[in-house]
Amino acid sequence: MGTSSHNNLPFVMSQGPQINWLLLCVISVFGLIALSRSSSGKFDSATASARPNIYSNYRRLRTQAVNDYLELRNLGANLVNDYGLCGKEMENGVPCYNVSANLLAGFKDGEEFDRHCEVLRNKQRCLTHSPKDYKIPLTWPGGRDVIWSGNVKLSKDQFLSSGSKMKRLMLLEENQIAFHSNDGMTADGVRDYSNQIAKMIGLGSDNEFHQAGVHNILDIGCGFGSFGAHLLSLQLMAVCMAAYESTGSQVQLALERGLPAIIGNFISRQLPFPSLSYDMVHCAQCGIFWDDKDGMFLIEVDRVLKPGGYLVLTSPRSRGHRSFLGSKRGRASSPFEEFIKKLCWNLLSEQDETFIWQKTTDSHCYASSKDLFPLCKREDGRSYYKPLVKCISGTTSKHWTPIQNKSSASLEFQIHGIHPQEFSQDLEFWRSSLRNYWPLLSPLIFSDHPKRPGDEDPVPPHNMVRNVMDMNANYGGLNAALLEGGHSVWVMNVVPMGESSTLSLILDQGFAGVVHNWCEPFPTYPRTYDMLHAKGLLSHLASDKCSIADLIFDMDRILRPEGWVVISDKIDVIEKARTIAARLPWEARVIDVDNGTDQRLLLCQKPFFTN
Image 1 (spheres, rainbow, N blue to C red):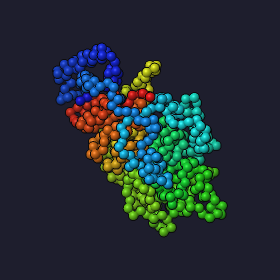
Image 2: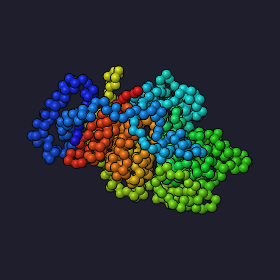
Image 3: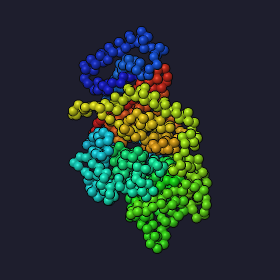
């Protein structure tokens, strides 16, 4: 079954009975006309032309609007009452990061601040509040430099008391936060700081990072993302990662600015990335005591760094840096320095407050001396919040390739265990999909700006989408096709647990990505993504016996008001999802884009409302 692509359907439901039936009659007339024309066989699928199916299906979709309208009326107009609103404490909260519950569960010594989804019991299905002063983010690229202060949990006192130089890149206006990326982080600003790092690794400027094999950067404790924003302007993928913060969150502000970010920390568990994932790891006053946990934090950095990759640490004020400098002045070696000696890293350069180490390109280095950290006896290529280990992994991986020696495309496919033709077919599928059904969605998603109560009529076009999540990313084909199409988006490519491990391939393309178990909430703040896309995820979830309802409620949590959901799957699970979506305050419609198959497209939009 398909439905109309009109946005007016939920609006019709909220009007008086006379208007309802008048509009219903109008829609019915269109439906009867479509039925009479379709009976002539002109638009019969068996004789359809070679042009995309979506265009020949318009009349059938319009006809279905009548049936869907009646079906929705039977469900009742005040659907939001089916589920209550979450408590105000969840307005900016993230499931699995409940410190009180973690303490009651026995976690201590800092582990109470870690992610513990196992503590979640009897998941509450409720809708997350939007702050009363919430406003739709400014469009890109304006939203990168100015955000609404009511959209994030950050007080003026917190801003003024912030000790981080990166956080001082902001100025608070009456109801906005303005970011000034040329001031504050270092004496000469972000651009000069980036150039300084480039010169310290032997480059002429930061425009040459690509030549040094640096394409993706993990920015730990990113402040509010100004360094990452600059790197993105250089066509580098910089992913902000910071610990969960109940207020003044770095990740929340970075995402509000339209910058890639995810919650993560160095406490007791590995990061949700495979070994050998990043070309550079950056930490500027990120607050991590690197000599804690017997050096396991440094081992974790070594795990995610590719051969020949760089660790950049800025500011000697942390314990580790201060001790490192102290040893150069004749004092006994510090634990930090001793741990560094146990890694096959080379101190490449030091200047002012910045130190850069380079990881070895020789996989045999770690086995060359008993004075080094031992090698792990068993290696698992996929990491998903496993306990930190005190051993070195990745040295026997087929992905061990120095970043300076980028392999040919054919060799890369061989390394990842993927046939080139399979990859090409996947990319062409997404190119075709964007050509075929995206014309129906694009006027809605990428240019139509719905009018909100009290607003003046907007002047189109408006690019309403910046932060996109592909919840079942496969090879990252949607990401590649969107960029080829010229859309100013970035995509968080999520590889579900249980699917083939393609995240390394996604990261090697310079995209952002993470492994995630969709039976659990995603580690991000509410209202942080503009569009969620999922192809085949519902079928995967059903096979894992996980709740589709729990998934959809988490999608509602992380989706901003007026954000979009696009789900492609088999008709049976699509109808289950549609039933749940109809009980939320979502506008939902099912579209048959592949006439004659069991595949359907569920298109939903979350409305704008605050409490």
